[in-house]
Image (cartoon, rainbow over all chains, first blue to last red; front, side, top):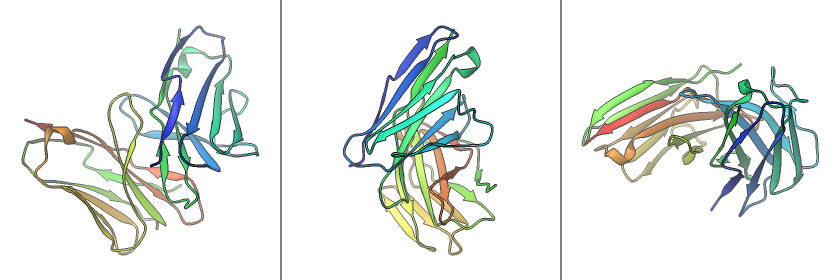
Length: 115
Length: 111
């Protein structure tokens, strides 16, 4: 199997606070994890690529100081949305890649609502 | 920037009908994945194809990777209401870990 979990599944926070989302590969090691954002009725938009033990690579237009990514182990990556604002409200999904590098397995997503 | 054109964008059919979803690009992919996503959930992997001309079957679903590895199709036979969902194709360019996603096909199968 290839199970990826995310925590929390949903979070509501006040504007200006920071929110941390965890992504774990439960039954395999993932040297690379990815963070996506998905707006309603749209496809997935890649935010950043996270490699274990190194700095994340961010896509164009994604603020690295706004979306902090840490990939401290082969099974855990975290995304912290700092000083969240209502426009950061979205569905955040992580994925983990097996060593064959062909396939990404996705987590169930985290619904973030910023009031 | 690579683009994956997915069509149709929306599809509403009756139970028992057949359908095909297409994914096309001008770029060559080292692999291509098909996912299905339910509302409020993450995409679930259906299949990965890596060889040009490859055909894979998953019960009533048939996936094909084009000979030139630029396009793919998903064919569903005798669709059922449980097949309802958003179908996404995603391709990986050779040497890259990143996936390029199509915009998705929202399928509704009516009983």
